[in-house]
Length: 484
Image (cartoon, rainbow, N blue to C red):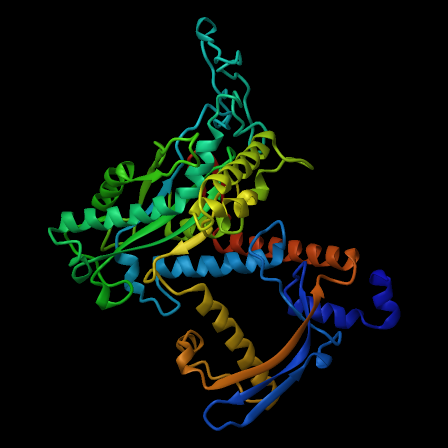
C-alpha cells in the first residue's frame, strides 16, 4: 500500500505516533493481547491496556537489537544505556556514589597475537615497506612487503599478505578461547594486586577490589580485541566506589596490568588426532593508559578523559562482524575465517564426544569463532543494563499514571525509586500476548523509520558538539582509529 495508502485511509497520524513510540525502530515486533496492572499490596486493578487501544490496533514494541546495521535506532538506545552504565562507574550517578571518580582508573586495550603478516592502515604511511635489496618472498612465492598506503576502510586492511602462510585455524581457536583468556587475566590481576598490598588472595576483598567494564571490537583482520576500563576500589563490603587503598595508585596499577597480562595463557586442546594443543596468549600490543591516577581526577584538558572512554566503549558495543564485510560481498580473509571455523567444528564433531566444548563451535561460524558477550562488567562496577531498562519502563508507567490522574510526578528521590530493586515494586503487570510478526507493513515505512533514526542521530550529535564546545576526541589503539 505504501505511505500514500496511509494518507488515503487516514492512518498516517497513527503511524507517526507508533513510529515515535518505538523510537524509530526499523524492525518493531507486533503483538496482540492485553495486560492488567495490579496493586501488589491491595489487589486493586489500577489499569488495563489492550492492543486494540493502540493507534494502529496492534501493539508495536522496539526490536531491541544492539547491532547498528540491523536497527540504528535500537542500537543507539543500547549505546546510550552502555554509556550511562560505564559513565556511572567512572564519575558516579545512577545510585553509584560520586566518590568513585577518585579511585584509580585505567583504559586498557588487549589485542590478539599475530598469526601471519597482514595489510593494515598505518596512519598515512606505507603498509609494509622494505628496501629493494631486502624484498624477500614467502615459501609460496608471495611478497612479504607492501608499499601501498591503505586508507581507513580499505578492504585490503586486515587481509594476509599470504593466505597460505596465515595460520587461520589457530586464529579461530584463539578467538574461541578469548573469553577464558580474559577471565584468567582478571584472576591474575587480583593476585598481583594482593601481592602488591601484602595480603593473601582470599583476604583481598577486605582491602581492595578490582572492577571492570569491557567491550569487544573486531579488528580488520577478523580478530577481536578488548577495550577495558579497570578500576581499583576499596573493600568490597564498603560498597561500589569505596575509596581505594593509598598503597596503590593509577600508575602502579597500570604497571601491574602490563606485568601480568603477558604471562596469562590458555592451553587449547587439540581439535582432533591430526592436530596439536596450542598455548594461547595476548598479543604484544598491550596499551594501558591511566585515566585517573587516584584520589584526584585528572585534568579535563588531558588527551584522554573519563567521558571519552565511556563514549568509545558505548560505540564499540553496537558493532559486530558485519562491519568487516566489503561492499556487497564478503572479504576473502573473512570468508576464510568462516570456512576455518566450520571446518574445525566438523573435525571436532568427528573426533570428540557430543558434549565436548568444541562441538558448539559450529554455532559461532557467523561470529568467526568468538562466543563471548560484546559487553561485560564486574558485578560491582556500576548499575546494570537491566536496571536501566527497568527504570525506563517505570518512568513510562509514572508518566502514564500522571496523565491519567492529572497529578504531577513526585521528583523527590526519583532516581532511587526508578532504580530500586525488584523487591521494592508495588505493582504487578499480568499480560497475555500473541506474536504477530516483525517489521513494518512495507519497505517504504521501514525506509521512513531509518530516515527518522538518522535524523535523530544527527540531532544528538549536534547537541553533543554544542555541549562539548565542538570538541571531538580521537583515540588510537591497536592499529585502529576511533573518533567520538
